[in-house]
Length: 478
Ligand code: ADP
Ligand code: MG
Image (cartoon, rainbow, N blue to C red; front, side):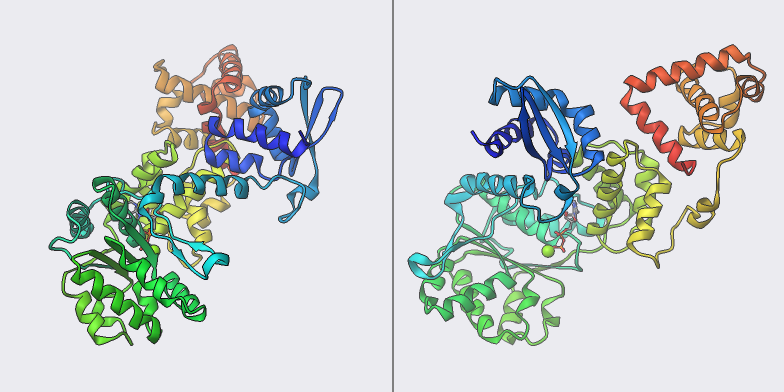
């Protein structure tokens, strides 16, 4: 077994045991550098990755190495900056490696129901656009403004070729058109496993037809498309000014429609505004059901964020989610993007998203954006200098008052934040136990010392607490 094969087999063992996003982050561009007398030396691109692998995954890595090669007794890590280069030939490109494996899996399940358009005879390639199983009608959050498109989609997936045919869904970019269109496809395949579902973007359709014309295979092209039971066409506005492919689409559409096959179309505008599109096509688009997707209201945005937190398997402070919902004004994609970034950023520095960190992300994405409910400039100026500042921050973070913190209540919900607060004042501001005791309602210095030691030892075991403390420190500008 070469070192490369060894590493692929190790990665294959580890991958199912950790979250995919972590796997891709921490194992990207890693490599087995050498084996020295039972020590496997792993090359990694950054010190950060080295520490992370060493701290969190060492046991898994060693186990997997030993399963693949019994001669290995221990493992060590070395940082090589050349591994951090984008196109380095040495490190394992896990994203590419497992991306192809993952799509293969999907392909296997769906194969029978997906039409593949074969282009260019024996030497030609097979092209097909897959349905992404991530999109379902169940995980499409329904609010006041998108109830109708959702209901129509559910109806279509229960009865393809029924009264909502064609179904035409339009709305601005990032409002869920592709999601709902693919969800219809997935829903139909679930309800009618024998149906042939074809999903294609208008852009892809145009590329295919142009290729087919070039290679004189238009006949085959037509045949393939006409075998489908359900035709899902994404972003139909792309056809504007593409006259010859429009014609082809028009014929395909008509034949499917006349054969009572379900057609669903998405677009960024209503049929009437599809400039430069054949009038006959426009009027046919309008014959079934035309529905608009709108930017969801606050409650729905919040529900979407909660839904995505579930999908990403993260727990986030409801106030922070409310803040995101309040400050994203354009699209659901942006909403999801802010959440993703917040999660990624805080996973990197082992903390949790806070209003401050999220405000910074929103500002970075759109400099012109006015932030509601947080004065980002003022907070940037704020440098935490005094014990009062720290108390204020800790109290805010835990939804308590400063009086709670200095008071006598010994309930865990108050006591733990109190101890954390003392710990931070001691460690970050370097104040004496006596002084801190005085500020906390005249407590004895030994009480403070105990609180600090207790917090320090908890921080060695309690991941959640580490994250909280790191988040508070970031709020302190540290
Ligand atoms: P479009 O095709 O309209 O540009 P997408 O379908 O790609 O938009 O949606 C962008 C992102 O927003 C996707 O990740 C999608 O899952 C998500 N999304 C949009 N609307 C909703 C919703 N109502 N519920 C859950 N997720 C949504
Ligand atoms: Mg789309």
